[in-house]
Image (cartoon, rainbow, N blue to C red; front, side):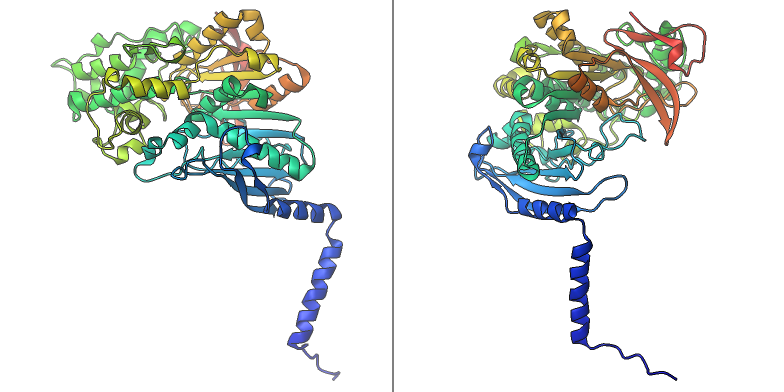
Length: 544
């Protein structure tokens, strides 16, 4: 037998490990080592207050680490940081910035949702994107987002509104402060500034996108605003009155999901066929006047689940009627419009949170009903408030919040002059925010700037039959088409001056594409031509 193998001692093992480390370092490509060094260097970065265009206490990077390539993404530097407040009693703006190895020299800021409070990490898929599309980070965008300057306090997240700086950050200033910090770090990492900067947001993030175009036009080359909460104060007040109505009229007799389905079916019976096809989608989103609610009234021969009580009918009418403030707020608004009849009552993000809530009002309820949180924390400043909301009583604070947070200024001349491009999109069956307010805003811009000028930088689209999140169900149970690549449409408009016309939305069941429809420019709608495959976009045209 030959000589037995002898295990080396501990000292030899340490030498071997060190040698292996040296070998590994020698085999690591210089570019990777350079990226690691550059990323690590960001962890020592601090920004002065002067490097951010609005008042802050400066900013500091908390950590910066290189994330290896995986799952369709190249390696990127993940940066976490905080922007310090001026007021020591306020809270910092926490942000995340992702710097891809293969940078396309563009930056993409991504918006939040609801009352915010969690850091938008910038790693997700933009709203409405088809499932097979590469993520923005994989396309080479440096992506970033923030928590808008407050955390998810439980159960009273809305209490941040009691601090003036935190309130200002949420309603207006956090996106600018985050933008300036991120763009400074991007330039430090790559050795050159971003050539293009875009903002993409939905809902609250859509309001933030409109904030970018209206209040910080010099900072953004392009903006995508999906179902934006443009008139924030009016929306939340209207939402509260719906919740209050369900509570004050008769909590036990509030509408139930079966009643919402009843209203949907009656709406479809009244309006579905007007677009040339009875498919469970109200495509004539502005022409539909809704069902005859009186015909749904309970009588002695009708089971309770097959009809509506007088109080339920009154609540439904309240939802579809405007909320008149009794005074004027920013940009001359005196009311928030009633909801259109989009047959979205039974959808996932239908009016259930407002009209058919599962439990009586509570402190925790304000986390799922932002209208309640708005009344309690922004206006009344009483976390137990459940009473009737008389806006005239709170006129001063309502007017102040509207001036800060309502993005209704139709003068987009500064944004247009710098070459900015804005894409807006509303969903026809949206009950979480009101598409009519978006239509009114678009008309105000056209009235202020003229149709020709508006067409040079602004597009408004409407997707009938889908709720706030983009979900809808056709009569046969299949999904309503809703997927489209907004980011590519925006980028082509900015980079190649190729303005988007009517687009095509596609439905997906998992990763499999299904039905398609034209996505028409407002005020047009998709009309079936009477022949051809009703699941194919080619069988429809955009009509008035």
